[in-house]
Image (cartoon, rainbow, N blue to C red):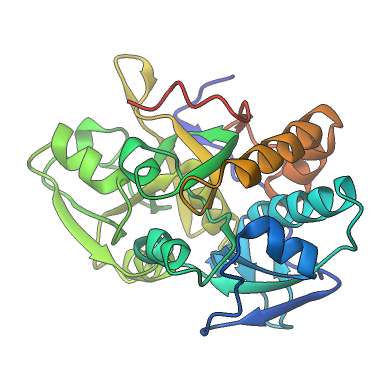
Length: 290
């Protein structure tokens, strides 16, 4: 993968209408019998983000768009087709980072695709299908920012990320002088950055590229490296109920088909411009968990 200090902004498709779907902001609507039972019954509740352009976005016209949305829809429909079931109706549920494990454990969603990085702590609470992509941690700064150029130049600066997410804490561990500011959503961080209340925002490059593309000329994305390597590797997976191995295997089979068919590259290009900050994952291989 080609490396560069400032990642080029990806073109984001912000409006993609999805047929046969519904939106909810709260409530359950999920089956307590597991993901496969919900798909077979014809109604499945899928969690995703609502405020991440190119990944999971609730559009003004009520439709959903983004790579996570498309991947989740592909997986659900592929599982239905594989089992000879009709394609189910998908009800979309907003799932903020800090609530994802709880929503799965409470049975309020059947699965979650929401820039959901797989790690050891989370895998103790939920199962993961995937990973379906690998990305890296980066920084979003204002376009006229000249002092912040890399990881080390963050020392003493105000850095924002979202509650329940790990990227800001990783920077804090590496640079104790960083001042952390946490908000409930990434869009709140972006607004704070726009208003000059923080110096930088950090999370996965995929997320930051989407926000940068949404506001041309306002922001830029800076790659973070340590000893010549990406500061972190983030492996996105699909979360579901703990110990539901049958459903996990079904997700991995669908994701493998997604990659082998070339459809993942099509979705990546449509939503994130096929950006170099993203590479395919290997579904079912969780050997990276430490």
